[in-house]
Image 1 (cartoon, rainbow, N blue to C red):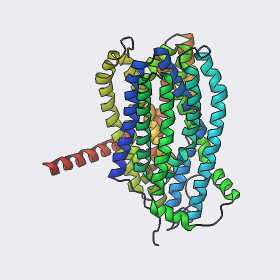
Image 2: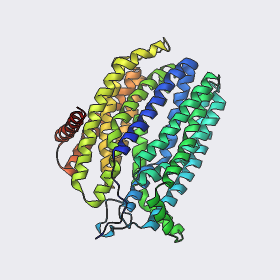
Image 3: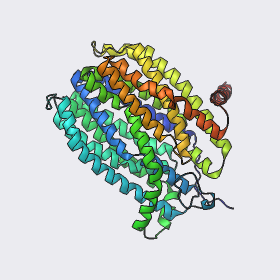
Image 4: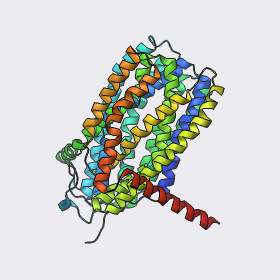
Length: 479
């Protein structure tokens, strides 16, 4: 049987641009930190991270549809003629693309994000405003109210324009997705820096955040339209898209998407929500210190996960086509790269970056021991999350209940340690870490290896040897 499907194979360009995109995302955040420290008060910095935490909460309305829609579009381009709620239907895999189904998925995607954006706008303007009003004592912090108004608009655009990135991820264009993000981050950094220096205070950060989504959307649409094979295929289908077809796709993808949304909610509770808990229990000044350390730990995770994320579309395509060896290679190489990069980056932040921060603001001190403890928690949390991404790539999501239970237990324990026992920031970290250690941290890596064969130690060892071999060969060729 001939294969007229779209080939999805990650290449060097995708790896390089994924690193560039991740680096620019981190660099923009890192460069924003000294700018915020120089131009804003501790209360303004703490309020900014409250804004960011609320934006993260609004993103939960995405409820797992981004990865689910992108995955199903990729399945369609790999030959799937009918979407399945779980797994794959071998009888519905062909050697050519059903372009009408692809059009229905894309149309469904845009409709979903438009509804999400409007809901986020309403919730932010009502409940979000009440919360910000409370923590700022009726918007007493400089520039707080107009900055919040602009930020509400950016919450809408960040959600609605997700359809652009979903399209690129769905065609396996990791390079294009990261180009769009990179140009967006550059615009955000430049505009924020200029407005901060012009004296716009917190408003500068809000306008910069809005510029990110606007520029990202323009670049992403341009790149998606440059995929000639896909565009010609989409244009070749002129059949009218019925509402029943959109409802059918929505019903199918919702089965995994809402479960993935529960996972996103649990993930928010285990990460970004801690900034809200910190502001509630410890105040804005301590929230600023904690949030900066959390931002570094998050950046280390993103950078360490780049290689694995680059090959995730390839893993999904291999799953549909039954290529088990390519699946194992993706897990071995992706996870070994994550472990090695996380250790190296954490060491660099602890020894080089943290000691420099007091130079920008003398009263802004980050405890290295506290940061290392936070990093251990983040390493284990993100590691099992990456294994779960391999699981959901096979169109199943057995872990959503465990995520929800662990997060509820974590929030309850955090409130106990911070509110009743007064453990401060240590209570935030340990309260979240202990429930995760009880199950998620070790169970889901084991689950993956039962599926593909092997063990954690074997996988990391195999992947490390592959990297060492390839690096050695490159060095020999250069000499």
